Length: 357
Ligand SMILES: NC(=O)c1ccc[n+]([C@@H]2O[C@H](COP(=O)([O-])OP(=O)(O)OC[C@H]3O[C@@H](n4cnc5c(N)ncnc54)[C@H](OP(=O)(O)O)[C@@H]3O)[C@@H](O)[C@H]2O)c1
Image (cartoon, rainbow, N blue to C red):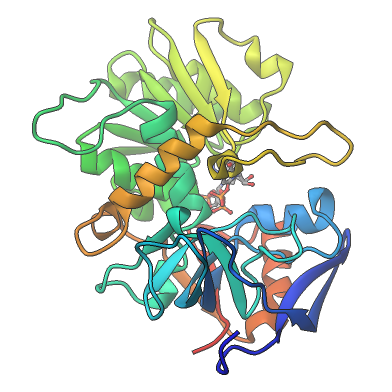
C-alpha cells in the first residue's frame, strides 16, 4: 500500500451482539478486483445499523452502511473511478470484518458507488445511501416506474408513502415528484411541511387510522394504485393496504408483513424488498436461518441505477438529500445516535458524523 495509506485504522466494530467497540488497530482493507478503497469523510446512520449491532450482525464486523469520502486506491479491473474522486453510497455494514462504513477507510465495489455531484457537500452526500437506494429500488425496480424521459409515459394514479418523513419516505417522495406521479403520505402533523417540501401532494396524520384511510380515499378519488409501507406493523398495514382503490395493486414494504397484514385484502400484493440483495451476493441475513440467495436481477438493476444517479448530470442532482443533523464526536459518539434511534427520537432528520477531513 502507498505511503499515505496507513496499515491500520479506527473503526466501530461489533465485538459481540449489543456490544460495540471503537477499535484502533483494524487492518485497512485492500481493494480487490473491481473494488476501490475510500477514505471516509462523513457517515450517516440508519436503523439497520443498530439492528445489526443488537440482533442480526456478525461479531468482529464493522458497523455502518452510508458514507461519503475520497477514493485513495483502486484494485485491478477498475475502469471508471480513480484516486481523488469524491464518492458516496452504501455498503452492507455489520456483517463483514472489512466492509462497514463506520471506519476511517472502507472498500466498496466500483459499480455500486456513486460519483458525488460537485454541487453536493460531503455531509449531504453521505445521506445518499440506504434510504436513497431503497427508495430507488421501490420506485424503479419493484413498482416498475420508468426513469424520467420525455418519450415514456408513466403509470397514472396516486401513490401512497406510509411513513413520508422517514429517510426512505423522503427520497421516495422526491423521486415521485420528479416523475410527475401524484403522491399522498402519512406522517405526524409536525412533519407535514417537511413532507410536502419533499414532494407529497397531500399528507395525512397516521395516528387516527380510520380517519387517515377515509381521507386518503377522499383526496385520491377512490384510493391509490401503488404504495410503499416504510414502517410496517399491523396498524400501519391496515392503513396502507386499505388505502388502495378497487383494482388493488402492489404495496412495497421494507419489513416483513404479518399473516394478519397479508390477509387484509387479496387484491393488494405485499412485497418485502431488501436493499442488500442489490449487491448480488448470497449472504446470511437472520442468524441461524439459511443464507439468502444471490439476486443477479437486483444487482443488474442497481449497477444500472448507480450509473444513472451519480455525477453532475445524474439523478442525484435532482433529488434532495435528507435533512442533515450533523453530530459531533465522530466515530466515538455514533452509539449515542443509535440510542436516539432506538428511542424513536429521530424524525425527518438524518444523523451524520464527520469521520475525517
Ligand atoms: N428493507 C430494506 O432494505 C430497508 C431499507 C431501509 C430501511 N428499512 C427499514 O425501514 C424502516 C424505516 O427506515 P428509515 O431509515 O427510512 O426510517 P427513519 O428515518 O429512522 O424513520 C423515522 C420516522 O419514522 C416515522 N414514523 C414512526 N412511526 C410511524 C408510523 N406509524 N407511521 C408513519 N411514520 C412513522 C416518524 O415520523 P413522524 O415523526 O412524522 O411521526 C419519523 O420521521 C426501518 O425499520 C428500517 O430498518 C428497510
